[in-house]
Length: 472
Ligand SMILES: Cc1cc2nc3c(=O)[nH]c(=O)nc-3n(C[C@H](O)[C@H](O)[C@H](O)COP(=O)(O)OP(=O)(O)OC[C@H]3O[C@@H](n4cnc5c(N)ncnc54)[C@H](O)[C@@H]3O)c2cc1C
Ligand SMILES: NC(=O)c1ccc[n+]([C@@H]2O[C@H](COP(=O)([O-])OP(=O)(O)OC[C@H]3O[C@@H](n4cnc5c(N)ncnc54)[C@H](O)[C@@H]3O)[C@@H](O)[C@H]2O)c1
Image (cartoon, rainbow, N blue to C red; front, side, top):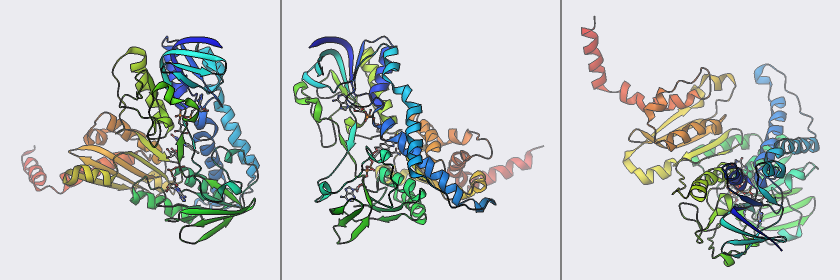
């Protein structure tokens, strides 16, 4: 067994682990990085990147069949599903060098392509190496949750780890789970010419504001996706190509392929956490505000930390712990400014509190302002008028923003900045967006907060009349 010592041992080379390793090594730390499977982790290989690439293929097909509104005749798209999957793999291959072993070795990181397991509070074994580290970062991510639904083990099914390799076009894709994975993949597939049924046990897009989720769901249903809610999958039957999902209410849904998209489970099984005195929760590794585990020399970041599970959260976590692991400075992770977006068309995005959460926290102090895409000139020109921005405001400052519509994910970034810096609505209103852009929505939403105060205010009216009387 080869003995290694380092300042920082990073376990897992996904979004979180790579960000820590790149930053720490370039700032002078001696870093060892372990990866048991693919460099780049879920996001690059089985998550964000392939899902957005497949959505882009679906969008290309959809625009062919929906061109007549622009004076261009509709065409029935000729979809080569296998070629669409080759496009997905090509996109992954284009991004891959950024996450490659060679690139990280170029930063001076020692990369070992092995799974790691703790053997003591500060030592980890990986293959024939025993690594002793001053600080350890667990960034092992999550895997698709496969619940023990009776019969599931008797039929072939896809998860996000297999779907992007599937080359045969599903005639009828059944998707269990109406969260972001289920609905993004539902729209990509319906646009590529598959029949799609989404079976959701509770409410589809249930983590988002229901008013805005309803707008997204209406569009998805209009495109032909069957979305059944309050339908808990309770039994699976059938054979390859002829699969049945039975739900608790007695209904049966039949299709050719099945995708399981019912959430995630933290990757902790291989880590032997007991040897390091690291405790877990129902959703992942137990961490405090500074992302330290119950072993003060070990941090957990990204999906495995069991909170919000997004690539940008893993990246943010990396920056939070870099401060404390490298410089010994106090550093805490906040959540109030973390956005998320579901990249269906229309997109659905959220940062900070939803209306219901803000109402519960602030009661009568809360103002909610809305602005509809149908009043945005660019949205009208692009025929993307279905959408809404809703801003929750307390004492002149935004505490949450929900968006549904064209580029909602892009627009959300501005509000994350506003929340991160505790900005006022007046500062958003002072921004000038180029005309005509979707971004004008943000300024108009801020304006909508001030308009009743300015336009329906008797004092303002009297003041203007008074000044006008005396003005030369
Ligand atoms: C279909 C899908 C679409 C998604 N789309 C988006 C999106 O659009 N935007 C977004 O922000 N997020 C998206 N996500 C979520 C995003 O992929 C994750 O939040 C992100 O990848 C988490 O990063 P991570 O570093 O925590 O874990 P991962 O990226 O999963 O990396 C963990 C790595 O650790 C390795 N590992 C595990 N155990 C060990 C061990 N014991 N030793 C060594 N290595 C180990 C794994 O092999 C893996 O490579 C999506 C997820 C899915 C599944
Ligand atoms: N655009 C993005 O940023 C993006 C895209 C995809 C995934 N992700 C990340 O991946 C995570 C996982 O996504 P997900 O969609 O798998 O999980 P999710 O937890 O968001 O949704 C899973 C859904 O499955 C339902 N469900 C569970 N068991 C069921 C059953 N037996 N029958 C019917 N329905 C059942 C749940 O009610 C829930 O609505 C997300 O929370 C997110 O963090 C992000």
